[in-house]
Length: 439
Picture 1 (cartoon, rainbow, N blue to C red):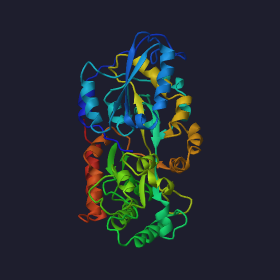
Picture 2 (picture 1 turned 45 degrees about the vertical axis):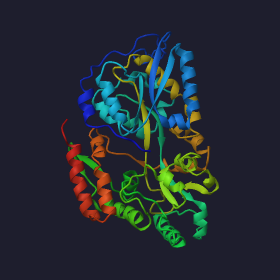
Picture 3 (picture 1 turned 60 degrees about the horizontal axis):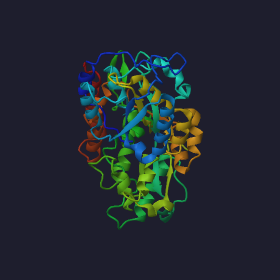
Picture 4 (picture 1 turned 90 degrees about the vertical axis):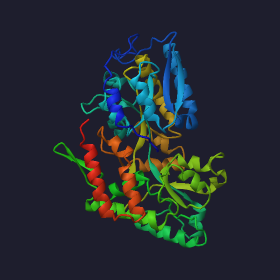
């Protein structure tokens, strides 16, 4: 999923926040008085949620609001947000003294910077009160936990990437089954390319050069990684033999089988696929809905669009998928912090997560089977979610993303401006400089 990450400015903005006591009031039980409150008569809380929920699972939000209002007597105002420039809005709001929401949603690559800046309430003492907290997805739980082990953000939902493909195009190319290895994937892509020789816009596998989520999956699949910490110092590791092998595998797809994406990211790949010239993309499972959307996509493709997990080097293995997702947190300056925590509890309880599981990967492994049973695309993404990777979990990581370090490296490789080795070495220097910077 697309995440617009937090800038370095957030450190300066939110570091000045003082830690205040959580809202007092009637306890929700279990010793969580300092975290949650059910005393909301006459009050209204404000929740910032991304429009993903508004488009995908509005009924889940409505059910949670109704349950919360019954529990507390408080009303809920949901203000729908967009990922674009979202952190700029957060930074300016947190810097002020008014207009601070009681709950915010953040992408899991954004959360660490805000935690380091002391932007959120400590929810640790109420952790056991959140349903399924013992089986939360490890990648999401880690993103919402401070280095000293304090829970500062609650897992919301996750997404993993799979190959979304055209079954009719596969059939025209004589391909009867999805590939089970990377070698088979490349062979199938070559067959697809040969089957559409007269379409200059045809991509056997559309791979925008700046789609770093996809490229890094190849890196991790080959046994490499972006960076590692040794003796308290970060080192970029994209120039390792394993990482370069992964980048070379990605490069082959991006240059041999993809057309029109040498300077782009993946943000519009759904709409591009809907135009009818693409056999495969690598996207989140819910992007199938975007491809078929009546307003922005092409619903006529419904019978010929399907998914499969990105294959690995051997049959039965999958290329690791980036575990994207969202967390929910209570800002330090929230006027109704106890009620905010209570709303998060209602929104992430078993009933709401079970309903959410029809649309996105729930925040816990206990409901993964429910998610997979909801449809073919869910089965593929559920399988992909069993083998995932995540970015280096450090507050400075956000600046790697906003600095477009990986995106620029990949564009240089795809356009032939630099070799894999030279581009990786240059990126390593930049990554290490950013991750080791003192704030």
